Length: 475
Image (spheres, rainbow, N blue to C red):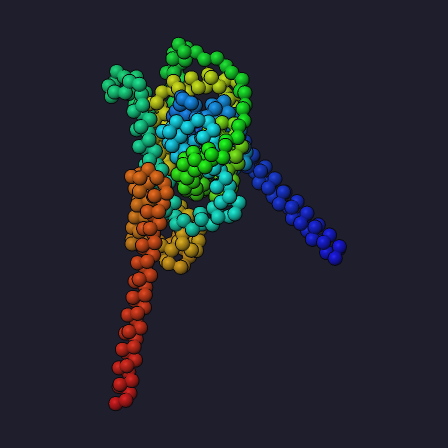
């Protein structure tokens, strides 16, 4: 008995050691990829690290200018900087750390304080963490059809185009006259974006960032703000805050995080960086949960990953985790030693440049819809069984490289655009997802109906032929 237990224990120990060696080898490969990529294209990696500023800064500024403030800026910079560094080291891709937008929308409209915002972030983190640990997140992601996933990505891209217009219109002196500095900056930034189509190795985001700093510098000189050491302050939100504000703002964030920050990011990573192992939905979910379960207690902004941010950083040159490690180090230094200065600098950064950066991110993520009916699509490339490939031949696996019929191509495009259109019109990822799934299921029901009707008609015809044969033999 004792020998059996000892053998089982030694077997478990050996398995644990093997698992640790495998994880360590993967970690070493990731760091090798990060270092090799950064040394090969340092300017592009640095440029790409700032690609997500267009979605980050407007929400960050709005939070800090609320009365009372919805977040602690120093804590947000410190913790998001640490999370940038850790995700870059672990995943090896330019994975963004960006605001939870549904929580931000509710919190800013209802003037939530730090405790109430933290309650919402912790509520979402607990739910996403539970879904990840139980495996429900992975199960769910495997059953979402590829056209619906592509539709979510395209819908996010189209929404970002709209958001870019909103950011551009927030200029203090917004008017479309050539003499206006805002118009000139928009034109300069847009021409830089067009130039990046030809000069793909040019650090466009870095150039735009430098231009923005030059424009903001006179205002910073007139309204100087000194340095300040970060003084962390932890708090525990009361149960009432979890029950009221946490659920109120958090419920709308859960489908957005599940679809856009986890499933869409995992799929987009495989699309944009096929040579790098894509993070699994479970890993993404655990990452989102851990980030908020650590930072929200200190007044840090509730954060997640996002397909728009990944597309933005890729669009401006990032190809590895080195880019966001660099960004994380800058955030960490600003948060620890220069919080007040960072707040002023963010406030005066021109919206004209931020808007074009959002526009570039929208363009990159919307482009992934192009591969829907090619072998670049997940279901056509991998040939998986089940609901994800049911549109090809219901109940049958896809054949890699097989040519789709015109009808199947039309179906897949229809599902994708219904999903994207519903997201754009409702401004809600969950509604877009439901619309896409209903369209997908309607096609499946149509196929089942046609198959059964054909089977029934075939049986009837067969019965008639047998009857005629019997009558002939009787004669």
